[in-house]
Amino acid sequence: MTPEHALDALRAAADPGRAAQMAAYHKAPRVYLGVPNPATNALTQGWRQSLNLPDRIALADGLWRSDIFEARLAAAKLLTQARIRPDAEVWALIQAWVPEFDSWAIADHACMAGQRRLTADPARLDTVEHWTQSPHMWTRRAALVVTLPWTKQNFPKPEERSARTRILGWAAGYVPDRDWFIQKAVAWWLRDLSKHDPESVRAFLADHRDGMKPFARREAAKYL
Image (cartoon, rainbow, N blue to C red; front, side, top):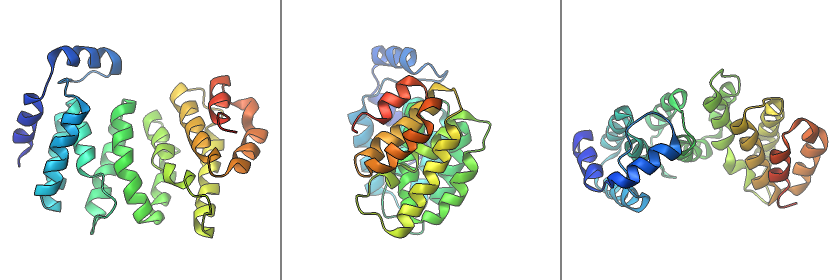
């Protein structure tokens, strides 16, 4: 399966009318084919099942480089899998994508692939911590989206609790950032954490709520 063949398959599922709506909604300047999500999911599932890992990495790289909206989503979906061994090349490719993030949909799909690689090797949080200092807003945002698995544990192990505390420190550092997407990411992390560790969220809000935008405070406290 070459990137050209994969793009042909995506184009065959395209809806030009839907493409115009997607372009208006997502706003980032690139080609939108108008492929419905179920069709993209079906295609990428078939490619995952039929390709070995090196070919899957090569296909994901080629689809991403096309800069077509659905192709970038498909690239991320190709690499969204819990167990991949060895996975160093997959993690390296996902890292290479991060500086090119420019819209929430593509960033979130790529971060879903990244979440699997982080939970497979939490030592990679050291790399993600560098993202928090990036001048690129989408990279800073990605540091919280890619670490969402650490909001999920009801009874975290000591190392999981330590990582959670570390990431909450990143979120605290983001509070003065007035960018809507950064404030939304902080609120998202806190909202998800509140379902499993409400006391940590209450403590965070007690310390930082006055610095957060009103919508972010409301979102963070939604389930408290």
